[in-house]
Image: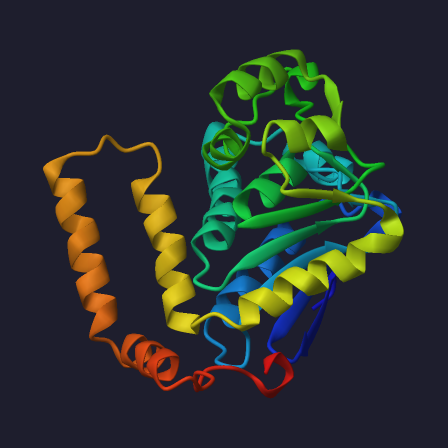
Length: 263
C-alpha cells in the first residue's frame, strides 16, 4: 500500500494513515486503499480488532486540496461516481464485522470526522480539535452525515454542520463523539487496554453485537423489533461459539477463542 501502513500483532491490526505531509488528507488513492484494506482485514481469522491510526500531527484533515482542485471541473455524473467511492469507504468501515477503534493523535477535519464516526470506539488526545468545515467552502458533509449524526447526535450536528465551528476534545467527549480523552503519553496504553478487552470476546458474537447496535439504534420498539431480537439470541445460543462460551463458563475454564496473549 502506498499511503497506509499495516501491522498485525496478537489479533490486533493497526491500519495507519501515512500522509503526514498533507495532514493525512485523503484522495482517490487513499479511499481505495482504505476500502480494500478493511475488506481484507474483515476476512482474516487472525484479526480480532482493527485500530485506525495516523502518523504526524493530524489524524485526518479531510479531502486533499489537490484532489479537490481536480474535481473542480467534474460533471455531475463524475461527481456522483467520485462521491460514491467515498461513501463506499465509510460504509465498509462502518459495516466491518471486526471491532474498530479510531486512535486519534491529532486534529480531525471534515471527512476525517466521518472516519472517526464510522469506527465503533474512539480514543482521543486532549489536544485534538474537530471541525465539520464543509459549509465554509459552500459544501455539505452529506456523505459522512449518516455516521457523524449517529455518533454526535442530532442537536450537536445541527450546530456544527451549520456553523463549521471547531470544537475541542472535551466537547467531543461531552456529546459522545469520542469515548475517551487522554493525554498524548496515555494514548497507546488506553487503546491497548481496549484492544485487550476486545480480544477476549467471542469473534462471532462481537460481530453480531455490532449488527444489533446498528439495527436497533433509533428504532421504535415494535413487535417486529422484539421478534428480531428474540431470534438473534436464539440463533447465537445454538451456534458453536455460543455453546462453547456457555460450556466454558459452566466448566470454569477459558473459552477456546482466546488468543494466547489474551489468556
